[in-house]
Length: 253
Image (cartoon, rainbow, N blue to C red; front, side, top):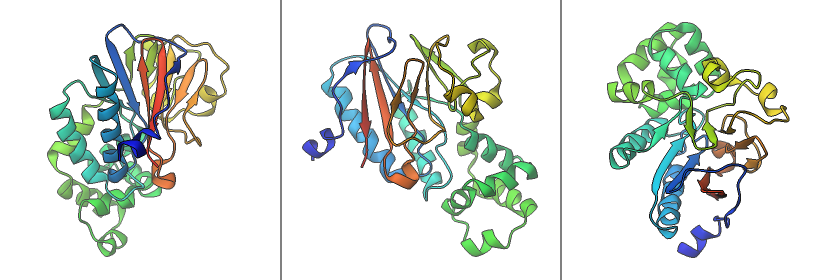
């Protein structure tokens, strides 16, 4: 079992930035309702973290815990429990959480988008039947979400952060607008931006670690690290590890 797990572990290589001495960070990409992959990856991180020796370890979840995959509600339960065990774990609000929270709050524009971007699977994960989902209009679906989503799920997601800075790195969901300092970024860009950020040649104020845009593998460039490997479609949920001037990655599948 350990041999199989460590086939997915890559030896450290030089990273584009540095993490403060004594700290270690694991940044986890978009989970999208894939509980089985989340459990696998967390197990790999625990083994890897222990093998590397003592450090102040922070797990940073880059957003999009929900939608598209089959077990969004269970993923949230799992991470609420993880935060209780690991109070240093930190969570970034993704665009999917933003739309989900708006839908729970009764925003019909949000719920229309929610239904187009994988929200059906999230609703079903809370015990709503496919038949009940299909016969609901948007107003009724808002009411259903208000009745089936536990208060602790909503408060957990509502407490997520927009941007986290550690050492030379800034962790966000989607990216940043290159012509704005980090302190001036708009939340919409942090959660939704793509080409303006992805095509920018750099450098930026910090190295941006992000999810949101699917790639075949973890992408490490001079100004960004992309960690979304399309778990719900590929079976590959990824994390990048950072310590000192080194980086490495862990990946399911």
